[in-house]
Every structure is written in C-alpha cells, then in structure tokens.
Image 1 (cartoon, helix red, strand yellow):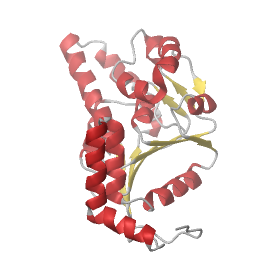
Image 2 (cartoon, rainbow, N blue to C red):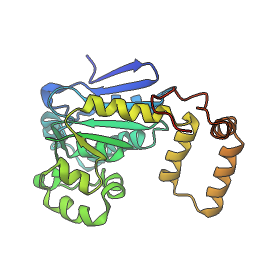
Image 3 (cartoon, rainbow, N blue to C red):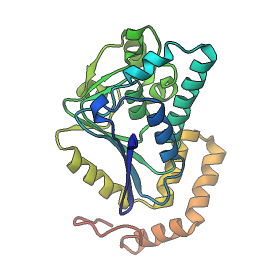
Length: 254
C-alpha cells in the first residue's frame, strides 16, 4: 500500500498523506511519492493536501531517522536533496495548493504548510520547527518558511523549536484561517477558486514565486488581457454576467 492516497474529485485533485499510524511522518517512500504526485497534477482547479488520522504530518519517521544516523555525509546530502525536491515540487505546483492541517505539523510537516498557497488549520492544531530539539536545523524548509513567516518570527521559532498553537500560526502568517470545520472551510475556498480564471490563477501564483520587476509585470498584465481567458473575463465584467468558467453563485455581484 502506498504512502499517499491520490483521488480525482471533479476539478479537484486530493493528495492525502496516508500513514496515520506514524502521524504521517516522512520516510523515503513518502518523500518520493509526494514529489511525483506534484510533478504533474494535470487539469485541476485546486490540489487539496491533507493527512489521514489525527495529525497532518509529524515530521520525520523515527525508523527513517534512525537509519540516517548510520549514513555518511554524502548519503545524508542525497537524503536532504530528495526532501528539498519534494518541497520544491509542492511550492512550484502551478495549481493552487490548499492544505488542511489538524493535529500536529512539525518539522518537515510545517515545511509542507509553508509551501502551500492557502492553509486552513484546525483550532487545536500544533506547530513547531522542532529540528533544533534534535541538534539539527530546519535548513531544507527554511527558504519556504522564511518567505511565509518572515525573519522576525523565524528568529524565535527556528532557534527555540518550541511548539505554538494555531492562533500564533495565524498571527505570524503561517496559516490563513483557523476553524473547527475544515471541510466547510475547504468548500468555501474551492467556491472562491472556481470563480477565478483557471489560467489567471496560475499566472497570479507565478507573480508571487517569480517576483517580477516592473517592466516584466506590465508585460504579463498585457499578455493576460489579450488572452482568450482575459478577453472573456473583461467581457463578462462589462456585460455584468459571470465568465464562462465560473459557476453561478447565490450572491453573484457584477
């Protein structure tokens, strides 16, 4: 049985960490499967990243860490690079990634949170950059976490490794919403995503990842305005109707 469960649900791809007996902790197999899952997500309006059982992801698997203790420097570098490629695959996924976080998000688990575009957390969720408690550092996840929470929060939570609650995660920008009903929150977010132009949403994400300069931004705007999707969106706005890709909401305003 694989470490992941991947399901197509209409226009949504659901990727679920499926090792609840280990609190969905990473091992070599899960890292490989997760990397491959995000290489090509196909046609989807969103990718929902979740974890089976009581926790989202509790970091590294104990047996995997025990085995790594016997590896030399180069073998450890290879392991770290495999994990880096996994985070990069999630981060660079062209389709918006929505993470649902319950229970624990520790170590590499918090790295997945940092790589996701929209993060909904259960009110009782617990987070930690816990690597320093083991005498190591959150190096592989640091580029993604720094971009998400900023230097000030990283200066505290990277160096203490302390656990913090969902309210703190919301305050430092790690998550976007805290709630008790993750399923309801997800449906609301998916409804919003379905009103956005599918290609426009992908290009909007690239603006965040690429951080283009002024001239490049102007060109991208012009390209989107002259695209078929951009033209349809503008016509819909001017004609006070929904564009062809958007479902009719109950409270539509044009």
